[in-house]
Amino acid sequence: MSRASLSNSNSCGSDFQECRRCEKKAGWVAVYANLSLAVFKAIIGYLSGSKAILGDALFSFKDFIAALVVVIGIKISGKPADEQHPYGHGKVEYIALFLISVGLIIATIFLFVTSIQGIWSSYYGMDRAPKMIAFWAALISVVANYKLAQYLLCVGEKLNSPSMLANARHNHSDAISSIMVAGAVLGARYLGLVFLDSLVALIEAVCLLVMSFEMLKDALKGLFDSALPSKTVEHIESIAQVVPGVRKVAKVVARHLGQGLSIDMTIKIDHSLSHQEGYLIVQHVKESIQAAFGNHTTVHVLFEPYVP
Image (cartoon, rainbow, N blue to C red):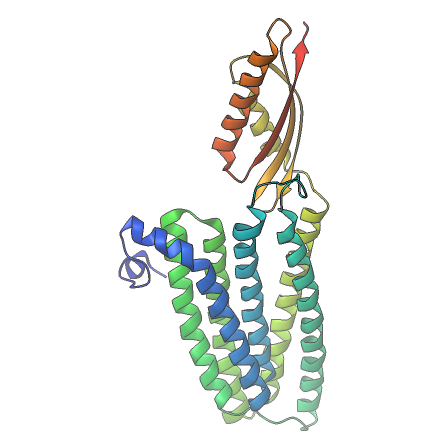
C-alpha cells in the first residue's frame, strides 16, 4: 500500500484537523465494519456450504474484537479513579479481552475439527464444492478490508496511533485471507479440488488459534498485573532522578493498566526540606512521568528523607 495512494484517499484528507475528526470516529468505524463483515460472511458460509468463508468470518470477528477492545480502552478504562474504584477502570479492557478470546478459541476449535472432517470427506468423495456465492462474498470482503485498512492506516500514520495501525494490519491480513478463500472456491468448483475449501479453513483455524491464545495471554498478563520490561522501569527511574530535589529513587513498581500504566514510586529527598517542599517535588516527578508516558499513566509517589 503506497503512501501516494494514501494521500489521494478520500477516507482521510491531508488536513490535520480532518484527521483528528477521523480519529474520533475511526474506532467505531472499525467496530461496525468488522462486525458487519463477520455477520455477512457467516451467513454466506452457511448458505454456500463453504467452510473457508466461515473461517474468514471468524477473522473478521477477531478484528471486531480488537477494534472493540480499543474503544473500551478509550471509553471506560480511561475514566478517572473514584471512591468505588480507587485504582481506576483499566482492567475492564482485560476482562473483556479475556472473555471474548476464550469464546473465539472455542469457535476456532470447532472450525478446526469440521475442517479436518471436510478434508476427510473430500478424500472419499462425500463432500461437495461450495456455491459460487461464496466466491463473490470473498471478493466483497477483499475490497472492504482493503478500503478499511487504508482508512485506519491513514488515521494511524497521521496521528501516530499504535492501536489504529494495528487494526489496519489486521484488516490487511484479512484481505489476503479472503483472496485465499476466493481461490479455494474457484479451485473446488472448476478444478474439482473440493478439499481446497476445507484446507483453507484449516489454515485459517490454525492462524486464529495462535492469535486467540496471544490475545488470551495479553489479557492474563493485564489481569495479573505483569511487570513492565526492565528497560521501561529504568527509563522511569531516570526521569524521576533528574527532577531537582530528588536525591535517590528508592523503589519503582510499574504495570500495565488498560491503555496506560500504573506506577508506584518511592523517592528520597534531603531530610532538611519541609513537607510542602517535598510535595512540590512529588508533583514535579508525577508531571514529568506523565509527560513522557501520556495522560493515561497513573503515578503514585511517596517521599522519604535522604540520609547520607
